[in-house]
Length: 563
Ligand code: GLY
Image (tube, rainbow, N blue to C red; front, top):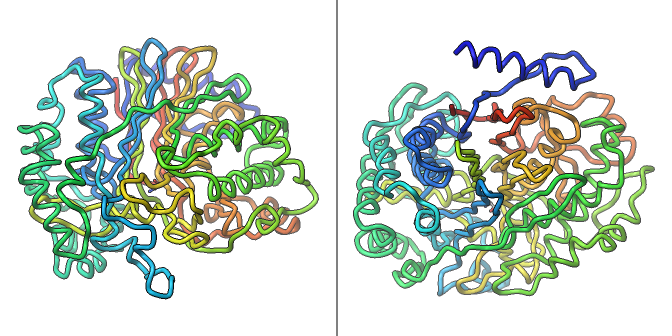
């Protein structure tokens, strides 16, 4: 304990010495060896317990993920999908894609009426919005390649938590209250979460525990075949869905080569297609690299302007070029080519705001709050894991399958249901991301690992739909360019631009009046109303002395744990 205190003081002083200003520094949890940062205390603790038993970051990933299904049904899931980026203790990087797929029977225009207009809510609410889930296949793929403890050991804590129950937090009470009417509307009756749950109540997930037990006892087939699969498919089909047993049986997670690129002296590895995350992140960082952002200052008018203009161009490219690489040709190398990026920024001027109509085509609006969930893990051996997983919207499609004890994703909305028409994140898309049988929908999830001097520096990621990429971006810059600690960076206010709608979204009451005034003078439209938060970043920083500092986002119930 005494040792930890001394280290804490040392670390605080170290970070403070690097600062010019003397404002108090917010320091996150600091540990010597290992850490898990996730959206819920229970999940972080379960992950750390696995590490204490001698498990690796990969073992902890499986246990943490399953614990989030219980403790954080908002996004934690066995019926959604996600991505994992990892770096082993030997410095090898890789990525796993367990993104949902369109069902076999899906068609390009399945969400359009006879006039070719989008049928409101069809791709976001109810059984037709559901993509073929990838999470369970993903967890088994991780276990097969990297697991050191038996899967039964890794799933048991989630089963026990589901039976014991999870205590409702204040933020969770508010989230459930916000969506309760939709649970009733979509399911035609009250379900587990429709109970007026209040802070400190305990929610037991008994049906979910039984579903977990089938997975524990029958492995991947406990989800994709047999009783679970039959209940899943029957429920969706009875409610207008098109999922079949064949869809579930055919699902496979895929190991992918992540995109690795340089920004100054950093080597950044992040998720590639079907996630747009790494490509957009690389484009934005390469666009701003020639500028002295440290001189501008974090969140200064010039800094916000520069990042906005780089983001505008990257998101315009995202809408046009990006889709499932197994289905469409995407010119990834050209999109991150130095000459291409230079040309892309050549019409940028400090004198006035850019205009998204001049950068590309399309119109729009639409927004959403923090969806999805991210967790970061570093183990005592030096392995690092960065995972973002999702049901897409809050509680996914709102379809709750009582017999399985779980909500189901609405990931089909991440396709471009009609070119030029925005999805729930206000993102527009093109042919590259149109719906096709068994295609994976484009994602913004950006689980990322940063290295410096050949060593692990940072594990970072966040939920937030379209804002994921820019939240990861700002945290990398906060830490590596503005010398912030991990917690200070995570807590720092964020902003976001995504080409369309053509405005800068700011976290409310976080940016000073002078900055906002200057941006308005330049012609930017500012939006402080769309959402109270941008992203919910959970990250780990390796400090110069080798200790780990967690950044757990105070915008949620996120918690760092470790030893
Ligand atoms: N569903 C959010 C994303 O994949 O970007």
